[in-house]
Length: 410
Image (cartoon, rainbow, N blue to C red; front, side):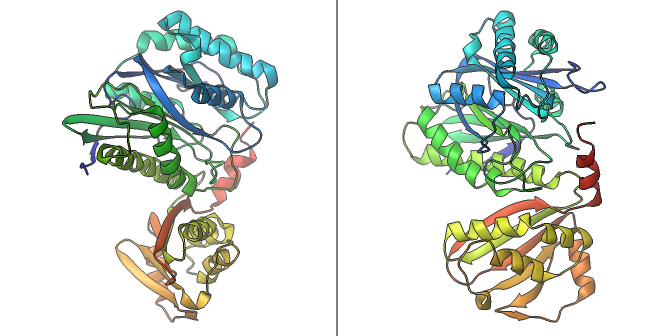
C-alpha cells in the first residue's frame, strides 16, 4: 500500500481545483463569509448528509445532485445563515445561487452544489449571494492561499480554520486529496454537525468513491460529538476531476485501498480538529476502546463516553472521577461485563490506570491532574472481551459553551 504524505494546503492542492472567497455581508460585517470551490473539468461527486429529518434547503439540493449522478463543477458556501426551515424561498435561493455561477462561469446550474451554515430560520439575502458569486468568479485561484481563505470564510463559531492535503501514489501516478471543514457546535454522531468539502485529482469510479466515503465517514466524522445536537445542515462532499492521470479505480484493488487510506487520513484529521475546537472547548477528549466483543459495541462505548456531559465536565475540571466514564459505558447499549474492564487516563506522554477488572485502584491524584491538564486527554478502555476497537472524539464542557449558545442568534 502506498505511503500517505501530508503536504501543505487544502482544497486547491489537487490538480485543477481553484477556490475563492469574499465578504458578502450576509450576517457578519467584518469578515469573509462566502467561499467557492471550482473545477473546469467536471467532477464525479460522492457525499453524505445529515440524518436530521429537518433538512436545510441546501442539503436537499445537494442530495439530489449526488443521487442523480450529475457531474459537479462548483460548490458555493455561505456562513452566517443556514437556509434551514425556510420553505420554498430557501430552495429558490439555492437555485438562484447556482444560476449566478452559470452566468459568470458558463457551467450548468445543475452542476453547482450549494451549502450554508449559521442561524436556522432566516432567509438568505439572494442579492448578496449573487454579488458574492460574481466577485468570487473573478478571484478564483489555484494557489494554496485560495484554499486557506475559503476554509476561513466558512467558519461560524469556529476559532480556527480546518484544512489538510495529502499526497499518495496510485500505480505510477501521484494523486492528492485536499479538504476543508467547519464545525464547532451542534456536533454529534449520525453525520455530525459540520460542513466538509474534499477534492481529489484521483480517477475513481463514482460508486466506489461513494462506498469509500460512506465507510470512512462512519469511522471519522460520525465518531465525534460536542454537544449531542445533530444539525439540519450537515454536508460532506468529495469531488474527483481525475486529472492525476492514474488508471481509473474500478475495483476494490490495491489502488482502492490506498485511496481509502488517504481519504481516512484526511477525514480523521479534520474530525479531530473539529472536536478539539468545540464551542468553548479547552481540550480534545478522546475515548479509545480496545478488545471489545464487536466493532458495534466498541463504537457504542466510545461514543457514549465522549458524549456524556458528566464525563466532559470531569475532563474540564481535571477530575479523575472514573465512575462517570463507567456509568456512560453502562447505558451505552453495549454488552459487556464491568469485571473485565480496565480504564486508564493518558496524556502528555503519561498513563495512569485507575480501574482494573471491576476493582478501583489507589492512584496518584496529582499525576491524574497533571495528565488531565493536557490539551489532548485520552480515556483508554480495555474491555478484555474480544478484538474489536473504536475511537471517538469530543471536547470538555466549559462555562463558555453556555455563553456562546445563549446569545448565538442575537
